[in-house]
Amino acid sequence: MKKPGIRKPNPAESSWEPIYRQVKLIPRGRVITYGELARRVRIRGGARVAGYAMAACPAGRGIPWHRVLGTGGRLLLREPVASLQRKLLESEGVRFIGTRVDMRVHAWTKPHRRKPRSRAAR
Image 1: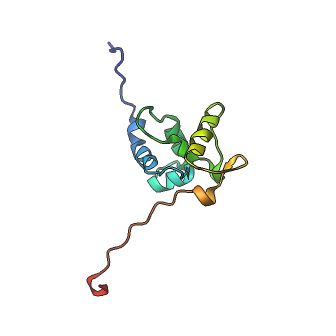
Image 2 (image 1 turned 180 degrees about the vertical axis):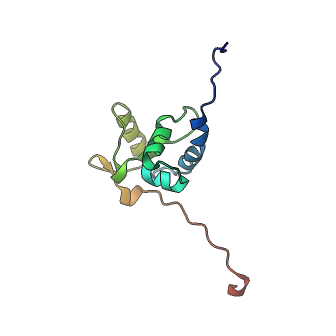
């Protein structure tokens, strides 16, 4: 017998945790595309799987879902969620050119780790 209010964990959700962790790293005023997100997390299925993960994004966990966009900075969600996404992005200072985010200005480039210098170089 199934207990009310207790949900069986979905195996797909746990596999999406790396995606959610990466999205949490995106700073305010920056955005990333579904494809770039998939490349950074190295998930099979690419942008489509990243989209599925973001569609299943759990509420109340502080995941800034609105910072993930389609190719070229397009908002891919349908109304009324697209208007909410645009408002949230604009409140963070993200500029739009027509219906697209200005990716040259707002694309998130993850800082590269510096390689430790060798002792000989010091």
